[in-house]
Length: 352
Image 1 (cartoon, rainbow, N blue to C red):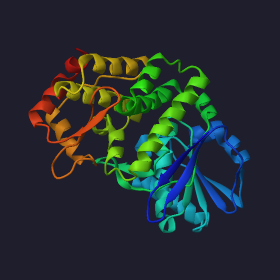
Image 2 (image 1 turned 135 degrees about the vertical axis):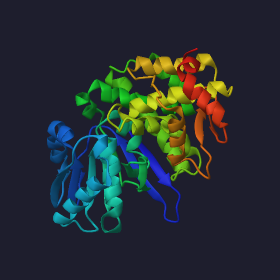
Image 3 (image 1 turned 90 degrees about the horizontal axis):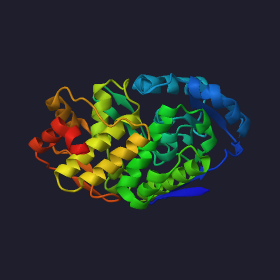
Image 4 (image 1 turned 60 degrees about the horizontal axis):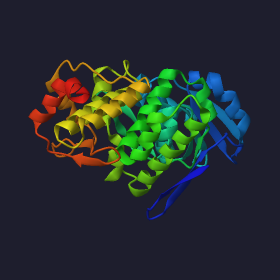
């Protein structure tokens, strides 16, 4: 199946997201594939057998969020120069969200911008990160604080790549699926509560619904001026957790799962979500083998870190909170003492 992105600019940007077996890809140019050792070891041969191009080169970068840095971007760009890519050349992001974010960012910079396509191989990247053109890297101040909105020319989602995905990585992707269901579609949330994610047919349906929701959001708001910010539900808290643990303890989706529980606790405190609804989300996360608790060692430091979040502006923290299941509200100017109360008691509030 195909889901389309159509962004209304002075020059409209359109591209398709194909959810199916990877097709034959023909390019009348030079192509560079950016990947990591894990993905290339499992799937590079399959990818290369599907590509026809003037020339295909491979850039292999280390695996892991800790390598999502400006130094790695420079390494990618240097390799592109060595391979003599020009403005008509193409980059292919072949891997998870880290590969996709960095390849897209490098493509936006190389000779002021060349085309790239996404071929995501993790569930998280298939349902979320590969769609919508958010690219970038981390630094010591936080996650994805350096980057650009740069849309791919196409996205090819082949669910069979997930066959080699470790269970923990798969669960991390499910967190992003649950995020979208809680924010936008209660029926989808109910579907997930009863879904058997060991079945490929169910996995494909989950991917389809998630991509359709993401495309619907991005088509309305490419650059996160409004509704797209809602996709950061769980991320405001989760990014702090990732930063505090130096991106080594939790996978991104795991941190987001904990962040959703924290956000739900704040929503309960504000009367926007019932204890029953918050517990339903927590149970679905735990059913999906995701963590739901975190020990905040310094509440003041955790709170101050919110101000480095991209969604914060003019000294005000924006929180994306559920207003019941399937609805949302962007809330700012919540009193500091309320937020800190939730942070100090979040387990009790979330689980009551």
